[in-house]
Image 1: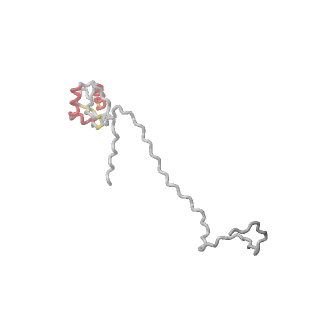
Image 2: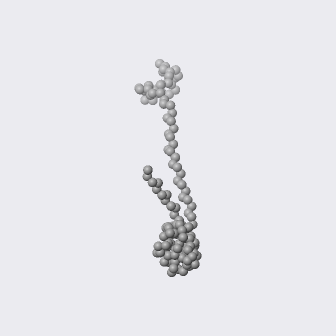
Image 3: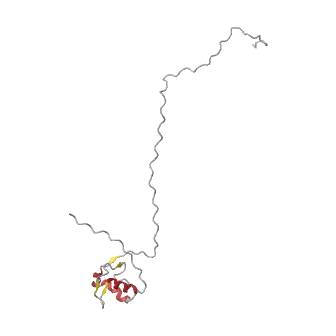
Length: 144
């Protein structure tokens, strides 16, 4: 069986460092093991207390700047942090709507009967047959 991979750790936000304070792990890093004991100071401090003291400015800046290069800081397991700055959270993007399928076409109406192959003659009205002679006298002579 294969070993289970470690889960990806969530990014840790970097703390705001005041002008008089410093990060004991160095720029862009924070303490990853807060309960470990840092032995370079007298009295010995937990890594979380050491970090708080550094951020509050209780360690002189020139001394604090040397701590990240000391091997004793390794017990604190310093980890990278993400600078969030003063950015305000942005609203989540509006999700795009799920596309709807094209509407299906309406069914074709019931087909009509097959067309007649040969057209039929146009029906003619029943007209009376002309009479052999005029029934009324002509009032005007025919025009040539």
